[in-house]
Amino acid sequence: DADGKTIAVSRFSESGMNQILLIDANTGKETACYDVPNNAFAKETTYGETNKIIAFAINNNDGIGILQLDTETKEWKELLAPTYANITSPSLYDGKLFFESGFNGTNNIYSLDTRTLRSQRLTGARFGAFSPTLSTDGKLIYSDYQAKGYRIASVAINRSMTDSADFSSPYRFPLAEAIKEQEQFCLDTTTLSLIHFNPQPYRRISHLFKIHSWSPFFYSIADVLNVQTDDLTTIVKPGAMILSQNMLNTAIAQAGWYYQEGYHHGKLSFTYMGWYPVVSMNIDYGGKAFEIAWERGIEKNEEILQGHYTNNHLIEAETQIYIPFNLGRNHYISGFQPIITYSYTNNKYQQHNNRTFYNFQYLLSELRYYRYRQLAQRDILPQWGYQIRLQHLRSPFDIKNFGSLSAIQLIGYLPGLVRNNGWMLRFGYQYQNVDNKSLYLPTQLLSAPRGYYYNYITRQQLTFKADYSFGISCPDLSIGSLAYIKRIRSNVFYDYSYNQAHKKGNWTAQSSSGFDFIFDWNAIRADFPLSSGIRIIKPLQDVGLRMEALFSIIF
Image (cartoon, helix red, strand yellow):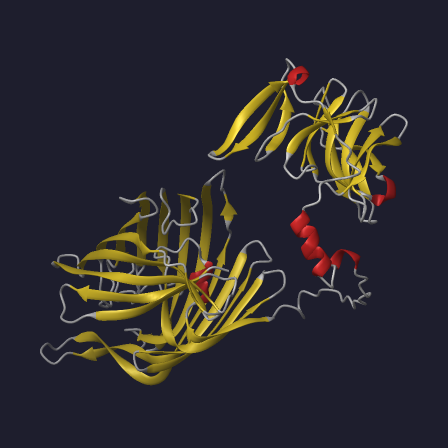
C-alpha cells in the first residue's frame, strides 16, 4: 500500500481457490485473504485508492478483466469486462489506472478512470510502448521501442492522446484470422477427457533406486557430482555402466565394469544426500593386490622391505561423510566442507615383530573451502575464484609402523586473455612424517603430473600445475537428431612435481605438458549437455606420448 506496510499478492490455495492475500510487510504474517469472483486467476495486482486493490484477472475462456476489491466491505467491482486483448503492467495515479495493452495490434499505454470507467489510449507508438509508470509531477514515463532498440520516453498526461478505447472489440490480425479458419483443430475449445490417476505414497526405502540412464563406457559418477573438482573433466575408461537416481534426487547409485591397464574391474557406488551429512560409499574389484614383506637382502645381511603382486584380485572400498555448507551469495558460489573418508584395501603389509600380514586401511580428514564467480553460459572456467584444501591421512590401526601424510592445496581461477577464456593454477605441498617409522604410506594426496604414476616412496613433495582453457569455434551444428555440437574448445597445460624420497635424499623432478581437444554437445536431443574429447600428454622426462579420453556431463 501507500504506507509500505501491507503487501497484496495473488495465491492459489490448497483447496483450489484463487485468492488475494494481504501480508504484513514487517512481520511477514498473513492478515487477510479474499476469494476472487468466478475463481479467476489474478495475474497482477496494484493498490488503488484507500482500501482498494485492483487486480488483472484471467477469467477462464472469457479473457482478461480488471477487478477492484474493497478490503473493508469485501466487495468486488468490475472495472473492465473480460477481453481477449492482453493487459499488463498496472500503475495507479490520481484515480486513473494506467496499463499496457496490445488492444489495437501494437502495444501502447492506456488509462482507465476508476470512477467513470472510461478507457483511453494515451500513446501512438509505431513499434510498441511498454511498462508505464507515473512520476510525482504527473508525467507518464514508459519504454518506447524504436528501430535501434528501447528508449525511455515521457509525456505529460494532459498533453497525451485521449482516443477512446472499446476493449470489447480488440484488433484482429487478418492473416491470423485467415489461417485460423483453415485449421480443423482448436485446443482452446476442445473437450478433454478425464484422466483417472492412481496416486501412490512415496516411500523412501522402496523408491530408493530408479534406473536413470546407461552408458557404453565408464566414468566415475562421484567425479561428475563433485562440482568443486579441480580438473573439471572426468577420465573415461572402456567399459559400461548404469546409473540410478531416485525421484527426490537424494540417492544416486552406479554399477559398472571397466578395463584398465590389462585388468577388468567391477565398481559399485552409492551416494545419499537426504541426510545431513552426505554419505557416499563405493567398492572396486579388479586388478592385482600386492604384499609388502620383510626379506633378507642379498648384498647385505639385513632385512629389507620388498613388495610384489599376488594372485589375489584387488579390493578397494571407501566410505565418505561430509557436510556441504553452502555459503554462496549473489553471483559468487561459495562453500565449506569438512570431510572424513575411511578407505580399506586388501593390499597387505607384514609386521616385523610377529610376521603377521595386515590389510592397508586409511583415515583421511579434510577441510575444503571454495569461492568462485558463477560461470556465464560461455565460460569454460570460473573467471575469478579460489579453493583451499587441508588434508591429513593416517593409518588408524597401526600408528607404530606408519606415520602420517599431510597436504595443503591451493587452486586459483583467473580470467584469460580473451573473454570466456580462463586460467587455472594449482599449487600443492605434502609432507609424510616417517621419523622412527618402518613403513611409508603407499598412497598420495597430491595428484601426479599428467602422464605419470607415482613411485611408492615420497617424504616431501611440491607440485605446480597450470591450465589455460580457450574456445576454438561455436559451429552450432546439428547432425540430424543424433547430435548437436555447440562448441569446440581446447586446454593447454603444464605440470611439474618436485619430490624428495628420504630425509637426506636428493630431490627429483617430473614434468609434463600437453593439450585437450574437447567438444561441447548434446546427444539425441537429450537435455543434459555433454563434453567429450581427448587429451594428448608429453612426459618431459620420458619418451613417447600418452593419450586419454575425457568426458563430463551436467545433470
